[in-house]
Length: 244
Image 1 (tube, one colour):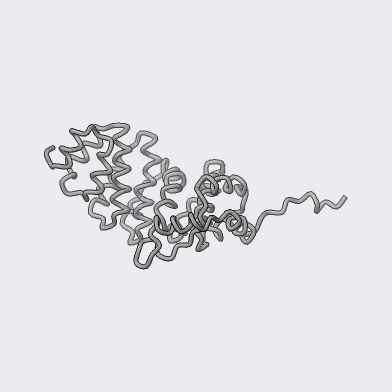
Image 2: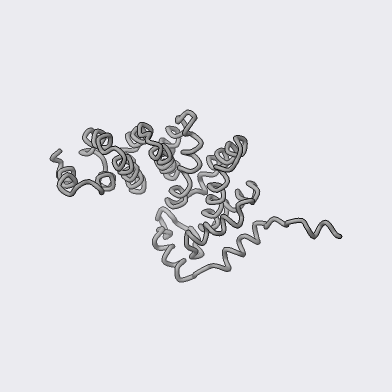
C-alpha cells in the first residue's frame, strides 16, 4: 500500500481563498462595503468584501482550525476582509487549546500584525479572546501602550481586550483605559469605551456610576450614550441633561 495515500494534505492559501470566493454574495458585499465605510477618506477605505456572514466564517474556522500559524498569517495579510476575519477566528479557536508556547506565539503574532486587524469587527471578535486572555494573569502594561498608539485599531484593541477582565469581575483596567481614551478624537473609540463602561455597569452599576460622575460632563456624547444605554430612563435623562 502506498503510504502517501494516507497523508492528509493541508490546504494552502489559494485553496482557502478559493473556498471563500465560492461562497461570495456580491449583493451582500455591496451592502457591507457601505456599512463598513470603505469609500475614499472613510475609516475602511479600500477594504474588499465578498459578502460572507460571520456564522459562515466561523464554520470555516472550524474546518481550518489545524492550519499552521504561518499560513494563518498569510491569510491575515489578505486584502479580503473575510479572509482576515477567518484568520483571526482560527487564532481565537487555537488560543485556549494551545500550550503556553503556542499561546505566546499567537499573542505576539497578533500584536505584530495589528495593521491588518483594521476594522471594528475584526477587533471586537478577537481582542478580548487573545490579548485580554493572554494578559489576564500578566502585567496589563501592554494595554497602556496600545491605548496611546497613533493607530486607531490598536486603541480599540486596548479597550476591547479588557472585556475579558470584565467578564471575570475585574473592572479597574477598563476604567484606567477608559480614562486614557476620554478625549480620543475618533467616534469608533467613543463607542467602544462606552460599550465597555456599560458592560462594567451591567455587573456593578455603582462602579460605573462612580466613574461617570467624575467624567460624564466632559466625555464625548456618543461615549456617554453608549455607557448609560441600559440605565432606567429617568436616570439616563439626568445624565444627558447634566443634572447628576
